Amino acid sequence: MAPQSPYGTDEFDSRQFRTAMGQFCTGVTVITTLDADDNPVGFACQSFAALSLDPPLVIFCPMKTSRTWPVIEERGSFVVNILSNRQQDVSATFGAPGQDKFSKIEWDPSPAGLPVLRNSLTWVECTVETVNDGGDHHIVIGRANVLGEVLQDKPLLFYRGGYLSTEHPRVTPAQEELENFITWNGGDTWL
Image (cartoon, rainbow, N blue to C red; front, side, top):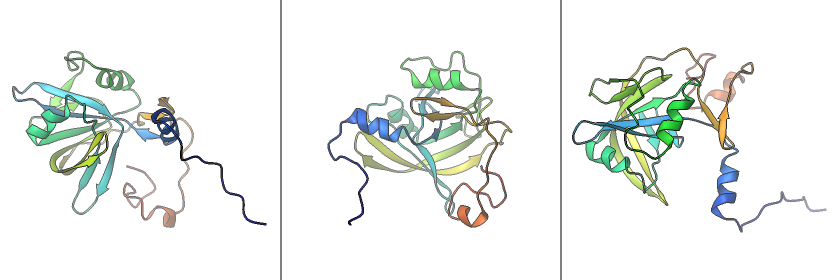
């Protein structure tokens, strides 16, 4: 008897694709920079990841319709603010359309003067290395230049269209299972 294949379909729409991709839990970041008049701008971004350790590279994917991406591209530098679980309001502010997203958000300048959102788990100041086509998104690779302090808090996670808590006890896999994970620091904690 032939093995049974899992059910699947090659006929799906964007809503079904979004639902399937929503099964993957992600962190939430806010990508920030300054416009030509040195006004802060930013947007919420869940399509972010560490890409390389040597050289230190990150990747994020803004929509091609984003009004903030052209400002970041022109500036050539940005800050990735990795949100804590206490920053759902920050995520909501930067995920919604609107002009003055910084009116109720406290921030400080990075070494290059770019917006670092207060109470984020950490932040990374980067320069744009390359930009590639990714369908209705751009694929942006940035070089990490400055790392912010890491706060001891829990991350803001997004799963199945909503926020998720990490209140459950952490389970640490065996070391050999983690060696190819880019965010594993060699100890028993995740970055």
